[in-house]
Figure 1 (cartoon, rainbow, N blue to C red):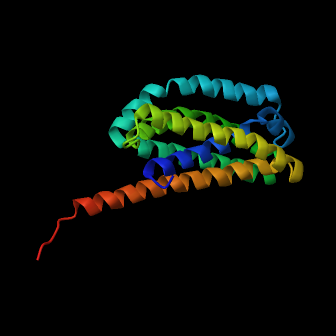
Figure 2: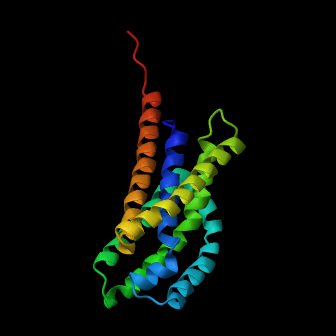
Figure 3: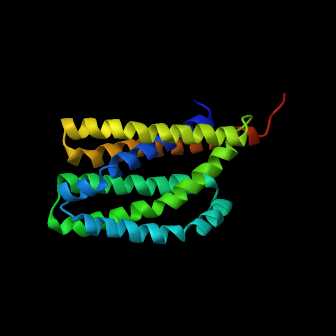
Length: 202
């Protein structure tokens, strides 16, 4: 689990958990916490989902140019920032923040193609001695575990603290996921620099 693949998969699992815990109760969350009618929030999700489909060809070009790890970290950081803004709005909500909340919903949906494609590419790249098909199976299983746990935690948080705490839990979890991805990248860079350093012999 402490391998580059394991750390990346764990970070991805936390991001999946964060996304799922926030959007499992999405229509109810929008109505109860942000006072946004389901037809309005659902319309934003539908429009952003259609627009997001056009991003998949762009993701391929970005991963080729900047690397799958950089695309994954950047898009995940945007998603974490979206959750942080939603968490703030959940505690200090007013009617004037409705537009900001809907914009965050839009941006959240648009990050998904970048995260999904780049994460799978990086999982294959970090598979090492494990076959790529097995690595992707493990990778998706960890993501599925995050999705499953989000349902349990969602119910516990809503029952004990209230639904307005859900965005905060999502923001905290997503932030930890981004830190793991960034730390993994930093560790790889240090490892590469160590290998590239010239050896001095006596």
